Image 1: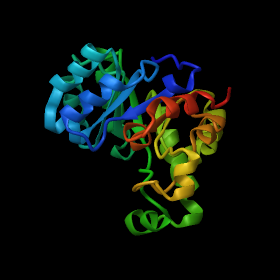
Image 2: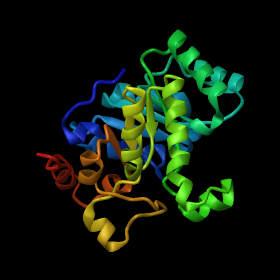
Image 3: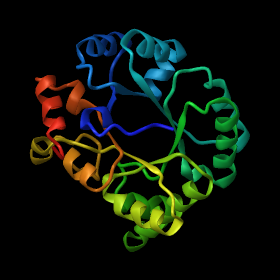
Length: 246
């Protein structure tokens, strides 16, 4: 299991999204050492594969969050995890909506082959709003909190190591954990600096909060992409991060 560092920059997963391998390597060369945790998503992994994961870990000494959001029948997801077990992955994502049997199969493989890895269950994507909930699942706005609570309970019952959710749902997670008497690691995407939110620079995210708001609400880790990878002054942004809760 991961030990959460109290320093905000070490609790920030830097998303290497919308990059080629060459662009990612240039950024990693320039990235301050205190940012030691990077997220490799589906696009980069499909383009460059396991070799890229190893390269980032070995050449730049970075911890790896492989964000593949696996979601399929239990046997397929379990075999996929097994195929990744020799990679230096500290975190990997699966969709909680894959169901109890899939999540249990994931834990079985994790306990057998990849105890170095934390499996994170994705609840609902931060790009979704109440209209999407209604159109896709028939979940009305007033019952959205209950839908999150069901997924959080499922994660807890299947001993999934952590949750990926908007920081806006952290109060619900805290409530679930009080009743379950256990602690699920929380990872929150959809994080932007306040000036970006004020300017409307939030990309395709809908449920967006600042790093300070996320950590104040109990996030163990936050995920930030373009706010850092496209920053005009990255060192200044890292300094801004480290002022959070100081």
